[in-house]
Length: 294
Image: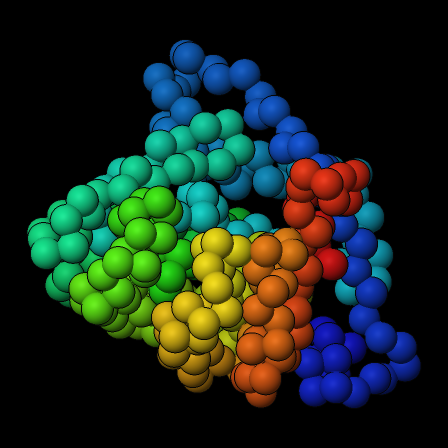
């Protein structure tokens, strides 16, 4: 932890931190669904006991070299933040999808806009249950982190649909402001809610990237940025990004392939970003792995 903390501060103790993590280019197939235990994949995803037991089994026989840590982070897929506000997640073996719910920019009624009711959301509650159960079971054996948050423009893309959002940016950008504001307005409260639970459990701040922080770590990203110009990125993504990073001790920006990397100049100009996490991408970049944790 001290080596990593020094790295965050652009210093080196005895050596730079080193991390080893295997992640296949193709998602591994999940185990067959036990119909006697679950009637659907969703039931397996939200089964708190199963998810923690499955993670603990995955640790058997593993050796964690150098600054590589066992980390359980509650996971319901990359669009769970969007689902806090309404709509449903569709679960597959190893990920989940979100069906857009905003078909008309003048009608945001499908979305919950009262923050006081967000903790009543089923996905919010399930993540909290996973977090508390892992803290109770994992003390001294593994770290417990927080989920993969995608607020801001990625969240709007989920609510609206990628194709519709691209058209909105070209044809009616002024009508997007209410959605953009809603996508970021409560992020700090949501992050703080789960951060407080982890801090009470004496945990560092850590998530899917597996790099822990003594403070408040965030992994900002905008995968949707691969489909927009640098002008649109600067106008619509960067203001939200700055609000995401406010109050964080460390920020490691997730660059999802070279489509997002076209915005690197704008990102590198932000002093709040301490590091870049690069994912190579697929297609002509094969065989570099699609989930590289560089």
